[in-house]
Amino acid sequence: MKQGHPKGLYLLFSVEMWERFSYYGMRALLVLYMTKHLLFDTEKAGQVYGWYTGLVYLTPLMGGYLADRYLGARKSILIGGILMSLGHFAMAFPGLPFFYGALLLLIIGNGFFKPNISTIVGQLYDKNDERRDSAFTIFYMGINLGAFFSPLICGTLGEKIGWHWGFGAAGVGMVFGLIMYLLGQKKYLGDIGLKPVRAKSVDQKDEPLTKVEKQRIAVIFILSFFVIFFWASFEQAGSSLTLFAERSTSRYISIFDWEMPVSYFQSVNPLLIFIFAPLFSKLWIYLAKRKKDPSTPIKFVIALVLLALGFVLMIFASKVFEKSGLVSMWWLIGVYFLHTMGELCLSPVGLSMVSRLSPAKFASLLMGTWFLSSFAANYVGGALAGNYDKMSPVIFFMIPTGTALGAAVFLLLISKLVKKWMHDNE
Picture (tube, rainbow, N blue to C red):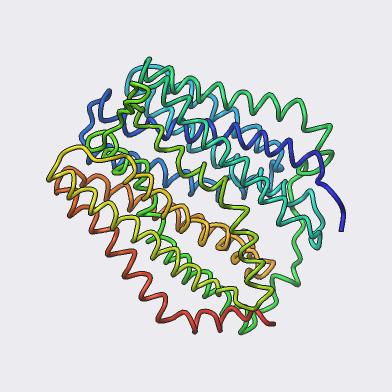
């Protein structure tokens, strides 16, 4: 086994860290900005949030296709970074035309950037290189490092000084990433990703799918369907849970005589991922060596149950708020802890599952299916969040609790069939 990693990985780690800094910094302020500055009602703010966070998972289909066929991954990353920088800076200007134009630039830019930087990480390694999983773990840490710091910096500027300062800081972060990419790409990436991938085998396209391949594809579609239930509720973090943090949570810390900004809660999830992702990675290896590693569908069931338990906490927190007023911030921290544990049972496991089960000739298409499930989930989650003011918080949080538990039970009932269709032993 080769020791260490190519220097290109650490370049991409840094670029992705700054890109995620910009994305999550802006996202932490988005709902608050719409409801407190633009004076949108919660229904409209939830719908805009849902469309935005959904479309950023839809456009990578377009960006990946254009990179493969015409542009190459490296040029696509550059185009995406420039568009996103312009989008963040457009948010720094007042007025609805700038607001909606900024969202459009961010959505399109993300489509060029998101799929292609991950592709280049994979291309740094041979297909059988044992360092590949470790490399993606390091890359994933970069994502969450940026996601941790951005709400602290952009959130503080946005809430305490001015909204447009927070959005401008997100733009500066994206520019930092672009500068690092431009300075380091030739030196550390060589020729990787420069040319579009055009080569396609006619014979391979004409070969019919085997029964095993068809069943594996069915598994991808089945599990992608259940992923919608997970992410639709998980993404309440940026909408209804943010509103609960603002309106119903005591954020005053007497020992420091300081009130914590609402956006800081957005840093809890990436911090927990940064701490627990390596532990989960070792846990799966430990269980696999003892032949006790849960199957992929069972890991998804666990994720959905943990998600539901988080919202059970929110039901109790809402009851305490209705009875006694502002609640402790530890309720929300507990929710984010349970949801993060669920994410670690589902997100990296799901990506691994899609890449493992996809027939080679449909690999990009089926990965696109995975992203499409996130698009659907974010739209549904936004629509749900738009109803936050139409019912009591107790009733509201019963909805994601019930849907997550229902999905978990249904998936558990069919888990043996799903596991059989995966044909992992073949």
